[in-house]
Length: 229
Image 1 (spheres, one colour):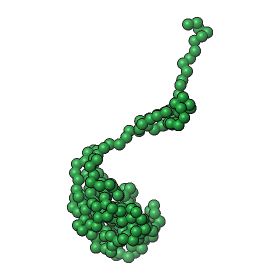
Image 2 (tube, helix red, strand yellow):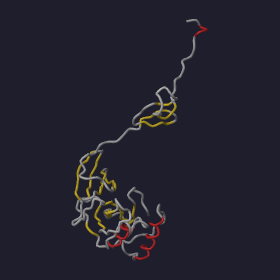
Image 3 (cartoon, helix red, strand yellow):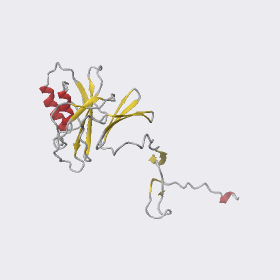
């Protein structure tokens, strides 16, 4: 080829993003993709999901995840049951039915969870759970018990003995059921200095003054794993 006709290669670069509307020849974007993200204008692998189990007994209506010694303790609340799933390296190792005795089944049950740590470092973390019939109506006033137990234990949760509460009564104070439950177990609630929800702060301040300081305290965290102390 004559030197005068030699040209450099032309770079055919796509713009970051996937454009599915219009025709495939219209525009400068990718036309399809799966498990893909874009970084610095380049497509990168995003990986995907790992199937742990597809045999849970019912639809999930609330979940809490707690990790200890390389094991994830997943508590999943269902309309009729409460299950604990132990997962290690992406493998389901065990399933435990932690449904409290006398639990009132309801197709509208929505679960709330919280885990409290022992501030001394010697006691086992405690999970507190409440199922309110609020799926169809967020302001349902039906009251139900508050349950608690060690988060890594496999036994059924037990009622705390506190007055029953409803999802309606905890709308303005999101942690009301869990906070009051821990107080009923004889656990002093420390003053909380940094919180994500202001209603939680208001209730915690009231309770921290109401219980004596000589009772051993535990620092609560929410279901996302963030400590609130």
